[in-house]
Length: 155
Ligand SMILES: [Zn+2]
Image 1 (tube, rainbow, N blue to C red):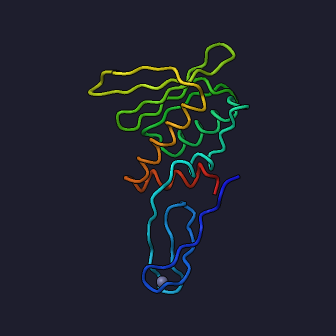
Image 2 (cartoon, helix red, strand yellow):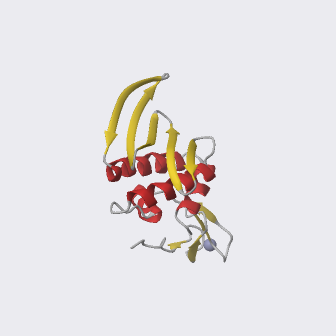
Image 3 (spheres, rainbow, N blue to C red):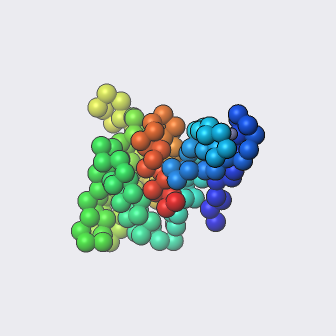
């Protein structure tokens, strides 16, 4: 179950603030104060609803959300409803999904100055955990990425 964002007291007048649709901004309806809260990777992961028993559908959903929301960072290839390939670049981290026959293989690369220092195949749930951490880190530095997270979370 996803825990909805909790109301926070306004730092200016103390009234309860409402979470906004980006999942990151809180607005005080009394005095108009707006604050940003840090994005928590576990909350984000819960929002994306990754299901280890249905890797196929979960990865397709993640790929769609990222390719739509961060087209400069994520490229996804679909054939109909089937995810064929996904590449997400976040800083030095590169998250890759490739189809091998009936299976989707989840890979991770650490890239420094164009060179892959690390290249590992991860279990899908582990891959997803690392991905959400990298996306959360990105979102905490970048308002545009934060807006994307609102979409991914389905809020
Ligand atoms: Zn206020």
